[in-house]
Image (cartoon, rainbow, N blue to C red):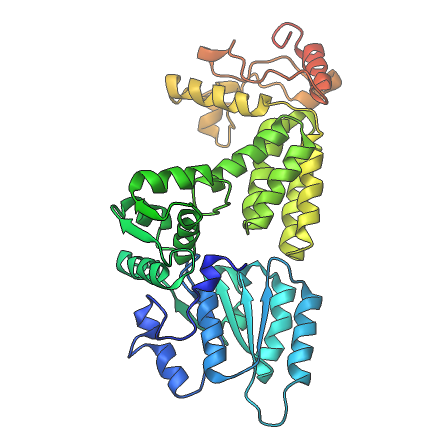
Length: 422
């Protein structure tokens, strides 16, 4: 059975709610449909405001073939196959078919380049949907050949109209007595998103009561019981990211893969995931395995070049490696201690022997006097003080107990004897 959001999807501009600047009497889309001339378009806006619906309405209104791809799942091969199909099915002067690409910002440069020639030749009319600023996420050559239309979150009045329409049209509510006592929670959880509103009302409709009173308490209870739905713009977005990082920190590769999968399946931006991996490599693994940060950085570069869906493998490999690495937060704790001392002591002067005597006056002021150049001493080491006088005994870095840091501890102990005698 189709979800409620799909069952309620508008079939025409007359049924479409919101976005009057595009679909109203003077809206550019309505005018373009009247003239039966549609350029390639990028719809930019938050989830659940009608980007996919408008693409389908355009196709059906103009009676053109319609092809659809998801940038989360499609690779360059998929794009080329669809373009070849569109080209082979087009006859004589027949109008160009519509190619709709959801989350087009997830396409990398090579995938976007595969579209460029087809758009230029008129093989397809491209309609892309994105939640991200097209200026940053879509290459200039492709963007210059498209009109960018901004869609806004639905207003409360539009959501309430949709609510009334659902009560009168959908089988979940027909023949039942439904009373809306309060709408604050319903509108708050919907957040201007028609799909969220439909998902919430589907939960309400699944209740067996013939008479239903919709209150703030009921909506809160139903939503909290079904919080597992991933929302990349809401609180659960950060909860799942937190679970992902804590699973890596806890050295559990299975849980790390599960939460990574939840983010991928939920349409999370891969760059957000990579940023979390970079932070984990530095904060939780650190000097216990310095290669972790190198691998996370390589992951970032590879994801930018490869794009979806192959990037899921790169992210998985990195997550597993980080989860299975020895852990140390010594670098994180060290810089936190240093910043705390700086906050307390202010800008302490640099010791004279560490200052650079670049002028004659500075030499007269004893800048650099007494500095011991480490390479002139056995083992490239001389025991001299590098901290300001007020904090000479302060320790910031304390090596962890795992991995590479055991070697670091021995190195410092051998060089400094008493100062770094951990």
